[in-house]
Image 1 (cartoon, rainbow, N blue to C red):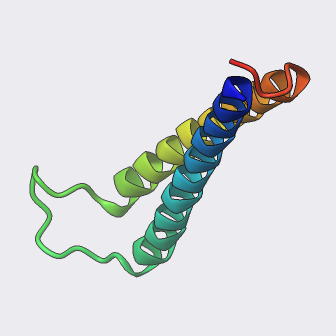
Image 2: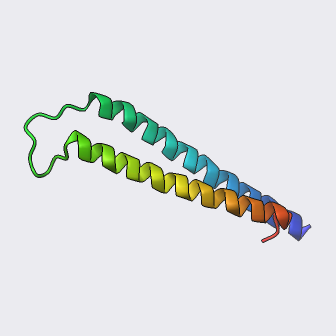
Length: 85
């Protein structure tokens, strides 16, 4: 019975991770449309230009994709061990 609880806990944690990754993806998708409309006036050293903002978004997307790939690898390992920690 204790093993079942640990299995359920592992599955819940994994689902929470995937849900969080999906929320971050939604936020990044929103930034894509915001960047299309981004037209800053009066640029200063504190305001990044459109090109820099786009580069930051691409970098964040790459990191998210790497994390998602790591999560998939983790899921394969957990399934192979029948979700036992």
